[in-house]
Amino acid sequence: MPASAAAARARQASSASSVLLRFGRVAAMGTVAALILIAGVWASWGTAQHVLLTKGREQGTVEVTRCGDGVCSGPYVPVSAGSQARERVVIEDSVAVAKGRTYSVVLKPGSGDAVRSGPAGMLFAWVPLGGALLLASVVVAGGLRRTRVAWGMAGVGVAL
Image 1 (cartoon, helix red, strand yellow):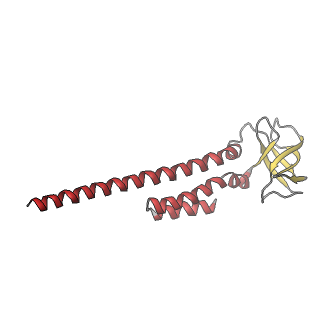
Image 2 (tube, rainbow, N blue to C red; image 1 turned 45 degrees about the vertical axis):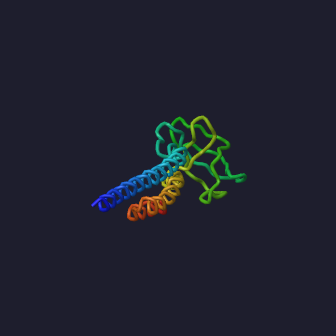
């Protein structure tokens, strides 16, 4: 009987170590996925706060007259009360900004930097979160083995 008792203890030790390893994997991959998502929200919030929280901010339009070095600029025409016209404001040059077109914008407080407003500005502001969702979905699928959740995260990331 001592041989079977030793075998039983070995199975218990093996079972306990596999549970411990599984817990470690889930904890590590969960932490990585959470950090990726937090970084995505952090990167998006710098722009998104101006688009989402427009109350009390200067709102208007900018006609893009010049682009270069990653930014575009043009004259600002106010739409909101208390906002003043400006000869030049700067907006980030992206695929969605073209010279000669007019865009609705919100000005960042205390600067001449403009952020696109409306649905286009909202989607553009959350692009870093979309990328973070795509990256985190790989971690969730492979590390946490939650494929349905991962597909949902990837779908939302692609939609953004």
